[in-house]
Length: 418
Image 1 (tube, helix red, strand yellow):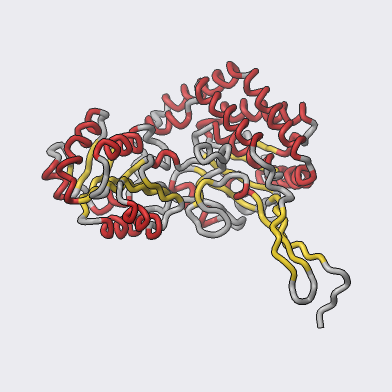
Image 2: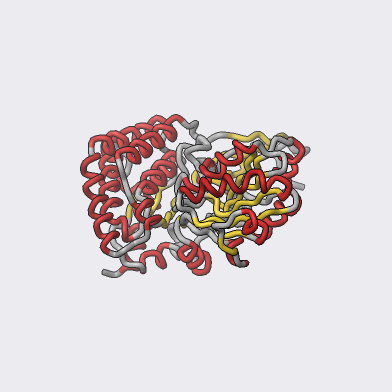
C-alpha cells in the first residue's frame, strides 16, 4: 500500500466532510450523536467480542497490567461511553456564538464568532473509548476527524468505527466526518502529523515517547501533554481523615491514567500524625513507597527515593513521598518537578488554599479534591480529546470549546480608512 497516497486520500475526504459539518445545524449534529449511541447500544456483544480479541493478543504479548486496564472494554465502560455521548448531546453548541467587542471611533463594530477548527487528527494508544469520545466532540464542534488508535486495540476500534459510520449514515451526515485508520503500519503516524494541506490540528494521547516523537516531528500544530506527574500536598491545616481518603483515591482508583497521583507531599509538623496510617493503607493495596529520609524514618516499609522519582510518571502502584517544611516548599517542589497537569492541596486554611491556587502553575489546581477529577467527563465537558498542559489555545481537559477557534467579524456602513 502507498501509505502517503492513502493518508492524502483520507485528508481529502475529511476536508470535504468538514465543510459539510460546518454548515450542519445543532439538531442535525445531535441526531448524528443519538444515532451513534443507538448503534453502540445495539452492538454491545459485537464490541465486547472484538475487545476480547485485542485482550487475548495483548496478554500473549505480555503487555503490562496498566496497559491491559486501559485496553479493556466492559459493559460498565460502554455505559460510560453512552453517558459521555449524552453529555455531549446536552451541551450547548459553541459554533456561531458571538462575543461582542464594541464600536471603534471609526464607527466599525467588532465581534468574534466561534467556528470549527476544520480537520482534527487524533493519535492515541490503548483506550478504545477514546475513539467515541474524540468522534463525538469533534462532530459536535463541527470538525471532521481522522483517528489513529494503537495497534493493540485495532479490533476494538474497528468495531466502534462501524457503529460510528452506521450512525452517521442513519443521520444523513457524511460517513467521512469520522475516519478511523484501520491499518497498523506506523508510517501512517508520520504522514498524519505532516498533512499540513489537510489537517488543522493534531492531538496526541499516549505514552511520553509517542508524544515526544510527535512534538519533534509534527508540522501540523499540536495540543498535548507529555506526562502526568500529579501531586497531592497535605498541608499542616489538613483534616487527617480527608487527607487519607483523597490520597488513597488519587493513587489507587486507577493506576494507568494520567490524573493519578504520582507524588505525595506532606507538611513536616503533621507528617507523624498522618503518614504512618496513610502508608499502611497504601501498603495494604500493594503500593510501593519511595520516600525522602524523613519518610523513611516514619515508614519502615518505604524505600529510599532517588532524584528521578520526584519527576516520574509511574502509571503503576508506585508512589514517591516527600516531607516538606511548609506550603512554600511544596509549591516550589511542584513547580520544579511537576508536569503542569493536576495538583491538589488538602487544607482547611483558606489563605493557604488561595496561595496554592495562585502559585501552582498547572492546568488543573484543586483544593480538597482527588486528582482523579481532572477529566473532561467529570468537568461536564461530555468527554475530552485529551488534556493540554500547553498555555496557548487550550489548557486542561480539551472539550468542545478547545476544538473551536474564533474569527473577527467587522460591521460597517461604508467606512474607509484615512
